[in-house]
Length: 171
Image 1 (cartoon, rainbow, N blue to C red):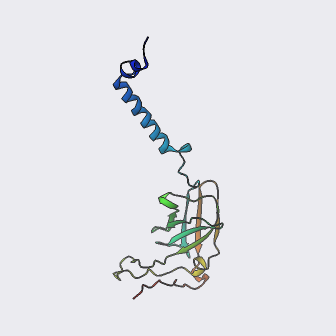
Image 2 (tube, rainbow, N blue to C red; image 1 turned 90 degrees about the horizontal axis):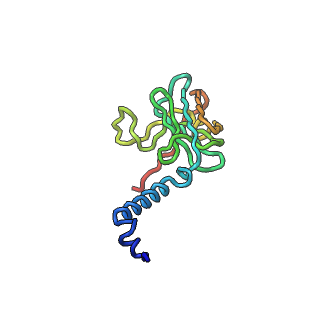
Image 3 (cartoon, rainbow, N blue to C red; image 1 turned 135 degrees about the vertical axis):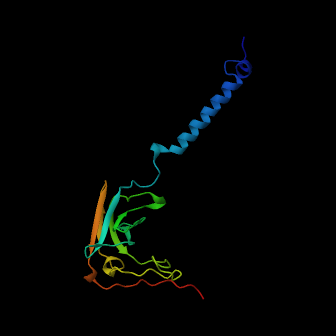
């Protein structure tokens, strides 16, 4: 009669094939754990959102376009390039935004950032967009369950430009 120890020590599963077996089990387990259920990242489904920002027909460069969910949650932010176009990014650099309703604010203000050609040592970039498009915005959009593009044609005459307060350090 062949004992169990025969199969463990000398049987069909030799030392080489046992190590290969456990290596395959380890790699398969690691791959399944890395994929998770259905390969999902665990966050909400994101939909591509792009667009442009113009002021009186001219592209607005270096503006921050912020989509804030109406029901609360994580904002999606895009920065315009020299031609005034933007692409929204969500957390972790993922592009897009979840479907839903958003309030939109657009601003060129930057606290403690240097503008091009400015050697001010970190003074804020000035706000150039009227406050009805940022601090007092009424702009809204609805991101659908697929790709969307939103263009904003702002009017300089829509209101006054107001600088947000700059936090001061304790001196």
